[in-house]
Picture 1 (cartoon, rainbow, N blue to C red):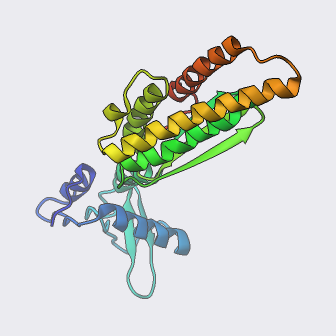
Picture 2 (cartoon, rainbow, N blue to C red):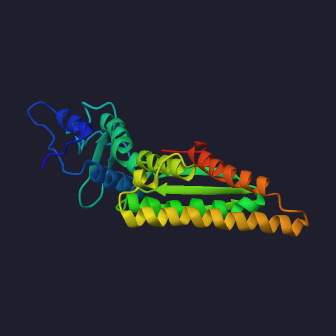
Picture 3 (cartoon, rainbow, N blue to C red):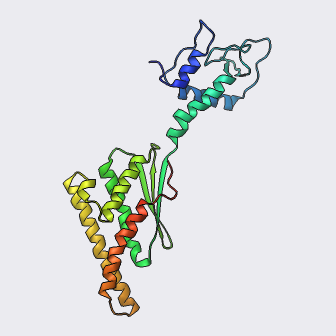
Length: 247
């Protein structure tokens, strides 16, 4: 099947008139093999008594501005300067972009008593993402550095846009501005998310009560209720921010 790459077609159509270079099914693979061979065995300018032809476009060394070759006992290989330029574009189109994983970072500064609840909320995004996008190859980790809790999402397919959409919706659910049913379709997943958020609320309330008791101060119920209301806003807003996000 002919290669659909625009650059590959350019290479094929740039050969000598009446002797077009053939299409190949996987131009990126062929380029990588060629460059690997050149790297391992070395390149040289062709000898004047030889006539070399570019293995990719068919140009002769007389037609090309430069021709790099590698000769061995089996068969020689050659590449002209025009194809070198085109290969750089191919590697950008098909190789570099696809091989570079997308990374999304969300860092949130949290007081000590908020920290465990914050880690729980950030960690649960992994379950939500799996429920929402089960076929996506994603790695998630939680990092802590002092008062900073960081969510790191790495997608091997290089596309972070859809992950950001899910993260945005999750942040709205955490802040109470979106219903879990609007994020997840499976009733069991919805119930699990609601239960998780409720448990985080209960655990945080206990942590705040314990913090006051350890400090030897009378529990201020109004202050605790206010902090319970502030926590989801703090976490949700942190998930929505875009520092260090990469595509």
